[in-house]
Image (tube, rainbow, N blue to C red; front, side, top):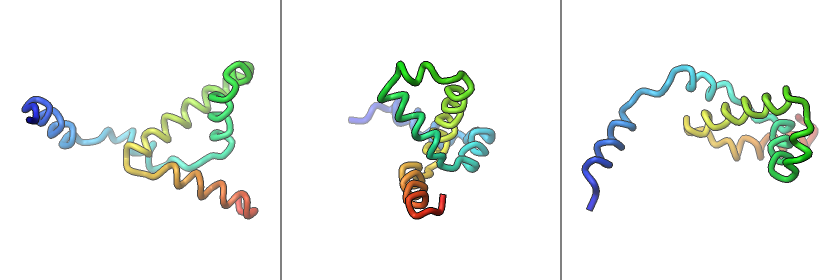
Length: 93
């Protein structure tokens, strides 16, 4: 049986208008293969990532926030990154 409070909370969340600033960030997000490489480095070699200049780490944080906003807005960021990788391999990127 569904909890009425959960149903009410879900209905309210679905009816709440999205944050306009977050929507703007989501619309302007584009895949960046250099940022994707930094994200991979962060996971694969945290100690190496920690030695990077602060502006690179901050840029990755902003990129990841924009990517999360795009995902929340329904943009398939995984496919966008794959398309960017394919474009780079074909010499288009």
